[in-house]
Image (cartoon, rainbow, N blue to C red):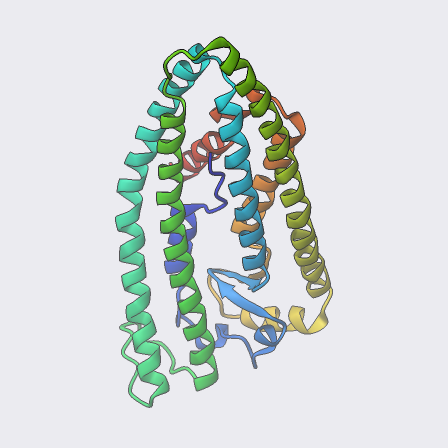
Length: 296
């Protein structure tokens, strides 16, 4: 089951609520943060290497799904039937959430695209008619914000894909758990041995993927630690926050923190190595429930 690290509704709302172009003085003066490899995500200045974290954790999630599928295959028919019923309820709830959220994401992408067009027009020398009565921005500030909007659109599109992917994964798991006809005992025994070997291979592949992802996470955390002590970064953020609303901060983003928690859950799952670790209550289902609570 997918453990996506996106906080879909919260993250999407943060993009639009960031107030692109709200304050001229809130842009990076004079490109210090961008020079440190940072870009703006909502009110957070984040490292581009966070994308490497998301990609690595996404790889872990893929291996986790493969491992979980093998564990499902080793369940008894009665267990499969019961779990299929539970996952069907979860899948239907997720589908309702997807039906509500995807239109919101599409609207936010449309709004950001309009802001993007206005900033491009300003960079080309036309008047900026953002409808907010803001102080005109310099080309450097406009270019910095234009880049940030493009990245926000890409992230929203990725969140949309993650939602549909998770729903598809639940569909596949329900299908995998559908009881099959009885098999020949001798063949069943041979199949059990092969399945046990497949379980061990899947667990080893998951553990290797986790180890590689840890390296990426640790490297990004190390870069943030350096930037936290960088006087230029501190000075730039102080200058921005004299007029910025909401207050801007140095990363990591909430999405990266959630990705790290997803990695921790995957590590616990791999370490336990038993089929009861594959119950939906301990992984993606728990995360989805927490998102619903935050939304409410």
